[in-house]
Structures are given as structure tokens and as C-alpha cells.
Length: 122
Image (cartoon, rainbow, N blue to C red; front, side, top):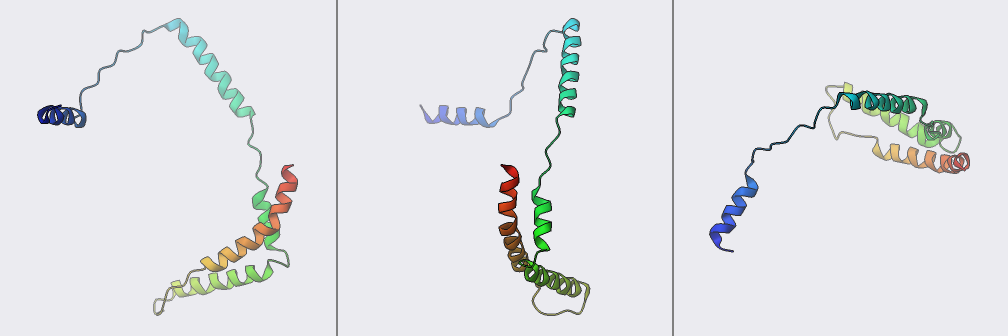
């Protein structure tokens, strides 16, 4: 391969060329059964219902337990502090977030909910 052919191939690969496609032959008789198949497929999709995820309900239930009450309390206090600091225009100092408190709360609730979830899934 010469240098000139290399650059010619490179140029051809990077340029955009016109694409030409042929239209499929029109068959009016074939359209009606296809429409029926699409309608049947849509009807089947409507009949199939998505099962409900039990995890959010279990997490809410576990947030209210005595084991997770301290984590929930710390998270709620942090949210109030951050919201108050965001509303105060004269607030100085480092900006706080509640990521750590959120992760503690989520750890507690998922530890509580996991056994219940797997019992329901069996």
C-alpha cells in the first residue's frame, strides 16, 4: 500500500457519500393482514400488566420502625438545616448536603426490607 492510496482510502472513509435505497414493492393485499397482526399485538400488550414492585412500600414501612428512627430523625433534621440555609441569603460558610445521612437511612431501610422482600418473591 502506498502512501497516496492510504490517504485516498482514509479520505473516502471519512467523507459522507449519498445513499440510495430502493422502495419495497407495494402490495395492497399484504397490508390488511399486517394491520390485523399489529392490532392483535397491541391487544396482547394491553392485557399484560406489569407486576407491582413491593420494594418502595417495604422501604416506607421500614423507615417507621424503631431501628431506623434515629437515622430518619438525623436525615430530617439535616434536610431542615439545608433548606433553611438555602433560603437565607446572608448564610456564610460551607454548603452542607445530606448525602451521608441519606446513605445511613437507606442502609438501615434496605437491611430491614431485604428479608421481607425475598420472602415475598419466593
